[in-house]
View 1 (spheres, helix red, strand yellow):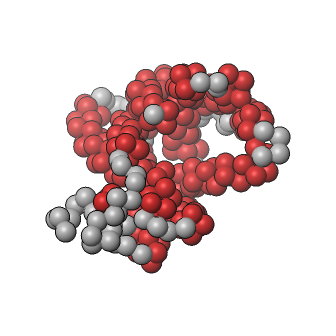
View 2 (cartoon, helix red, strand yellow):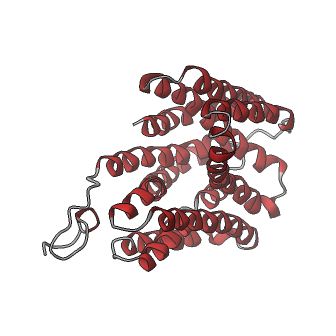
View 3 (cartoon, helix red, strand yellow):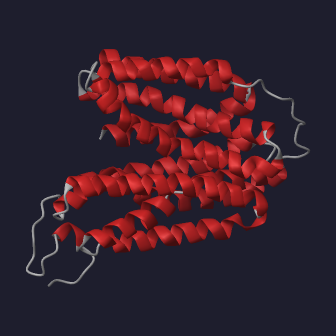
Length: 323
């Protein structure tokens, strides 16, 4: 519930954050987002004593997330040369699974030694130090007319709807994979290693995708479609019993099926260079909106093995006819 509330608040904050970035500049909103993120982390360390307080603080952090995403998209589009923007967006999006790995590493190094609250204090200090690294805004020429942007809004909404469907499955997969694999009879160790492998593949795919985007910038819609197809194949493989289909499903479903956000941002910014924050706020809303029902449905899905005569857990055989 808390995680779904966080992404729901991020979806609601994306469009207003895009307006703020376009009006006040990426540098100001970046600094504001970093400050809000540090305050949210400190709030969790100090005041997260119940579910309602955690949800309230996460909603505050969701605003920081929306501002940071859209401000960084604008900064990359205006500071990075066009021939390297694909890789820059890939590096930016690869930071998300890398941060997840770092959060896991903080459990034995900080949380189990000093306490989990101190892990959030340390994260807040690191976040606050990033304020000094925010580059100043560069002047940009005003758009010649607003009619093309209005016509393009419909296409952005379609892209946002596609991102909603894609993000719902891929993000929920990374959250509930280990729990679901254990329910199928796979040991927690191999299940966790499979998720780690999927995260590593996801980082490499986001970096590699950005690299190839700089060489074939006009073909990214087809690349994104191919990655989504890989994700669909991975989800189907996860319905097959056994550790080998599990690993293959994670690699295809999570590693490749969740590596497209950087390419999407790159393509949208490339088509809307005069208003990158406003354009990506629409598609980013779709991404966050898809995460909310995806996590909620998977969290509410029955987790007990409930073995049927065929031998496969009911949770993983919902799409098959009765045995």
